[in-house]
Amino acid sequence: MRRALELAASPGVPLGPNPRVGCVLLAADGSEVAEGFHRGAGTPHAEAAALAEAGEAARGTTAVVTLEPCNHTGRTGPCAEALIKAGVARVVFAQPDPNPVAAGGAEALRAAGIAVEMGLLEREARQLNRAWTFALEHGRPFVTWKFATTLDGRSAATDGSSRWVSSRPARVDTHRLRGQCDVMMVGSSTVAIDDPELTVRDEYDLPLAHQPLRAVVGLRELPEDKRVFNDRAETVRLRTHDPRAALAELFSLGKRHVFLEGGPTLAAAFLRAGLVDEVVAYVAPMLLGAGAAAVGDLGITTIGDALHLQITDVTPLGNGPETNVRLTMRPIQA
Ligand code: AOF
Ligand code: ZN
Image 1 (cartoon, rainbow, N blue to C red):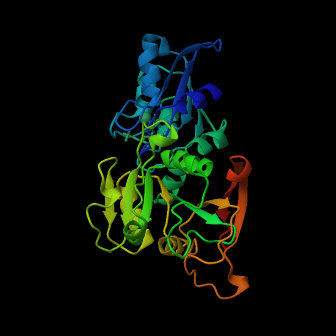
Image 2: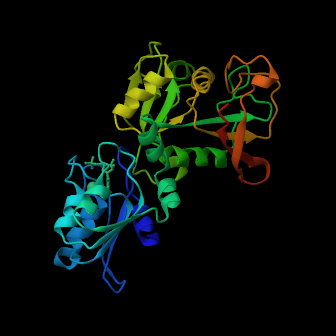
Image 3: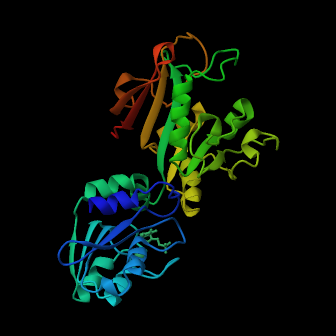
């Protein structure tokens, strides 16, 4: 199963509507017969890839898969049926399929007389497809809210001169995280005022295989020459002020992980609606004393109502005067 997880995590596999899945076929003596992994929506599932490599040798093997084999005909055929036809003797999988459309593979396999075991390294498999699993279980994309701030909670100086409060190492890290998401989201006011490009930029020497979708939320009319509308990536406009409606539209487009990048009003709307699942804050050891806040009004007037976060990681980025601190947090739901 560790090998299957390693295969699933193969570099270069694009994100998107489908999970990362790996599969290994083992002979009775435990030796490996074939292996496969899923290479993105529309391509063969991991099981199909392994079966194709094994050919006749698949008969009597144990299939070790990171996800419950599917039981539906979607972009490709049902894997449970393919495993049965190939004469596989036993199936071991890590994570039950949270996708209601595709689930039911375990039952179909058992009904065909195949021994099925589940739950092996399930935690690792869920972690590998963390956002995808969350999205399928909740019917909406997983939301990471990212912001950069000075020590005193400012995201810009009053005269607007500060395009960046974070240091270069922190910005490189932001671009790396962007590349791991399906969508980068901003409000239409942020586009009007800050004019962000919202791409994973090569100036930071990151692999550019994947440019996430750019989503602009809000009703404000915007000039066409804003950088978010350039041809470096696709852009959608979500003409709503309702965070839930915006997420529903993205989910129906097959998007599973949203990277919410501001501004303060949009972030506040998502936080008030309880629609932020993870917070990444880049803190610069710098004081402004005045200037725009990183987040808008949350409707909180008394300390007892404060929104609390659980810190899950603290990482310093850069050296010397360039050092920023990245805090990763999870909102604690009341
Ligand atoms: C994958 N790769 O290796 C496995 C998947 O759109 P389809 O027809 O490719 O089906 C996607 C669903 O199939 C996916 O959401 C998951 O529930 C199931 N299993 N999907 O993309 C794979 N084994
Ligand atoms: Zn399948």
